[in-house]
Length: 365
Ligand code: GLY
Image 1 (cartoon, protein in one colour):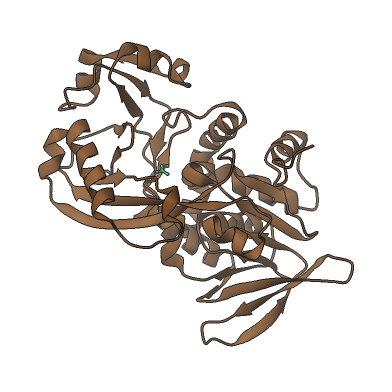
Image 2 (image 1 turned 120 degrees about the vertical axis):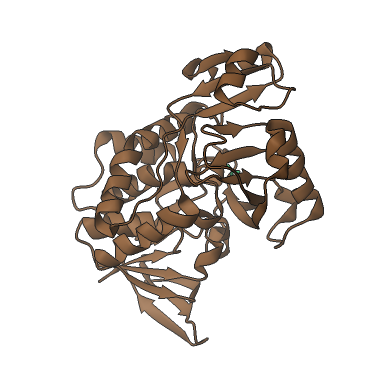
């Protein structure tokens, strides 16, 4: 019987690919691929620039290490490049004291104003200090990685059902997962039997399992077309970041709007915030031609870490709640879920991470 992947976003595809590589029969159920956070994100690989700490920093660092091998496997299966760019990320600060108190500053190279100007020619005048995280980078998630993963999955025999909404999880009398009830693209309801499924519905995950502490945090974004060589490093400023692709496209993110819930659409305030961020970080980019504007919903959890591994129903696995770090964490998420569902089971290091990020870690004593 096939393992069902509930959600055709980045986590769903990454796990589907991993399970297919392990020899599983895999079927991905996807509602609307365009709303997947994998298409929305800027693609930063930034555990240090994001200033993560504790267990989440460790998870991010472990995933970052795995990214080159993970991407190489996807590229080999899909024969498509993913746009991995280990370009380094600069975090600018107004003062040296702000820089030195950043949670991850010890992992980077400290910069003064002259160093900042060398790394980011044309950087705004307000920034007097910075940290260069050479180990952080980016991947072209929106134009390349998602497509490459889809192709890699197809190549490995994964089946897709697009336009179908999972309405409920079905259980045996003993409480195990027995299948999912879904509405297909024609609007017909039916039950698909399954003994194993992975829930990776991003910000929408709690609609199927209300006990999951996942809520949407809307982010608005835009892109500009810059000259090809204008910016080499990602700039990660407070409230705005600029991510230069190889062809000069500049991806600009992102607002953070928990109060918006699932409200779709752009807002003048959100777009103005991004424009102000561009002007402060790289003034010349304010005159670059606009290309696209879009929005999405980050899946937020109380500690901003993902929910990974066994879920509240035996047979149901979780890979959701990656909040701001989904692209970064896809590689380790695929590995951990692949190990959890494998016959051999996870090794001790994987077991430790799965225990750390179990879904019910927030429950009181
Ligand atoms: N990873 C950046 C963001 O969520 O905006």
